[in-house]
Image (cartoon, rainbow, N blue to C red):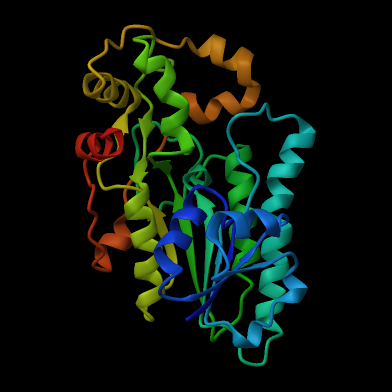
Amino acid sequence: MNILLTGGTGLIGSALVKKWQQQHQLQVLSRTPQKVQALFGPDVTAVANVADVDFNQLDAVVNLAGEPIVGKRWTAQQKQRLCHSRWDLTAQLVNAINTASTPPGILISGSAIGFYGAQQQQLISEDFNDSTNEFSHQLCQRWEEIAGAVKSPTRLCILRTGIVLAKTGGALQKMLPPFKLGLGGRIGTGQQYMSWIHIDDMVALIDFLLQHPTLQGVFNATAPHPVTNTEFSQTLAQLLHRPALLPMPAVVLQCLLGEAADLLLTGQRVLPTNATKAGFSFQYDKLQPALAELLN
């Protein structure tokens, strides 16, 4: 297949490239094409602009680009960056697909479980329609709406992604230093749910959607067993043979991150109902084996 990938140098994108570069013809859209070549070598084509891509020659588009959502305070300026890094590129891709005479067969487009807003203990599948209207919901809702303008015959799969756990990069790498020092612990009350997914399952799910031509719609990219923040913290500490005694008080996190702290202090208990119904099998459905593999 001839595949265009955006966000190819990110956590998920780079893992996808490594899986696919021997199987498919890959074009990676990036503002820094030199970085793409340095990471993946000459068998991956780096492109700098959507206009440089012939969409009539593509079989699939996988759209994972976007400014990282955690780590910076959500100032008005940062919110604009978070939104437009997703919305604007998605709109360009949809327009290019819709105006192609032989458009690609599938658009797999990113979103996040932030779509659902803060839901605490509520079990959530893809048809849950009582989202709370905070910033993360507004960002994801508009992102999905823009992708939703893609026309038949291109099928659309939306990925509402949870916390992706990987050996290098992502949330786990940020958590490890304090936990390794025995300074880790729950965040806030610890009762908020963390809906996580192992990077190998994330990549496998995207590949599964690509390979199954009847599948379309929204898919929660999360493992079948979400856990509370307390359970996550205790499991990580046990595997590192460290205590998990020092909670991060909510007020400290709010001072550090402002409104962005809500992502860590509130949660969603999300189930991958549509992926499971479609026959996708998770290699890592429980947290302990997933973390054990990543820490090995």
